[in-house]
Length: 199
Ligand code: GDP
Image (cartoon, rainbow, N blue to C red; front, side, top):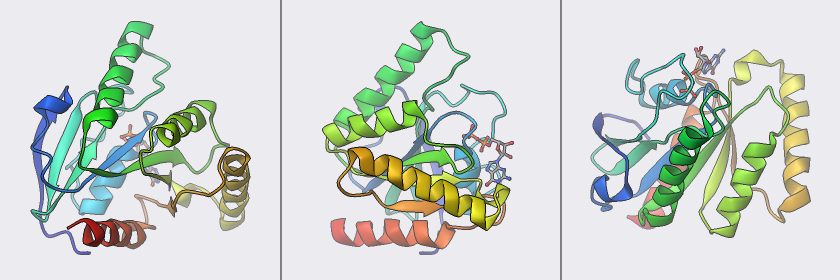
């Protein structure tokens, strides 16, 4: 898929404030600093579409982008901010839970994890919750350029094994780098194939 148009639409706190659910929607979520803004910019070939923030916790709202006039890309607030107060973390968690529960046009949630790290408890627990709620999701490994191929292979295998302790089947897995654009085609092709099924 070629992205010819990518427009920021709005930031919302509640699902009710989001744009009408009239197009397939693909949301991206992950711990702060995982590389979410960089990935969204890389996918859209824009430098500053999603603000790249060095400050954990800055992306706090549900941000909608309209892509090629036909689908929504959504930048969700990150989870697991160690630096936030419990009250603030609970608030974000609530925003995310409401969004996931009520957004009827959500076609897929991309859960971003840093390819350098072993599976993290918060990520695995989050995915378990998605499974229980039947929310379709995929895993996107970020920053693959920071690893040698053999290290990436090792981490990938470890992650798969960990997932298979809980899951019978693996979700789709993507390997991406905002630096060298690895994974861009695969991810966009996947979105296109789901769009074809839905539109
Ligand atoms: P966010 O908080 O998840 O939106 O993360 P950002 O996109 O702001 O990225 C966090 C940091 O990781 C920034 O310093 C980025 O330059 C860096 N980063 C993000 N993606 C990549 C990547 O694919 N490769 C490398 N080497 N660095 C990356």
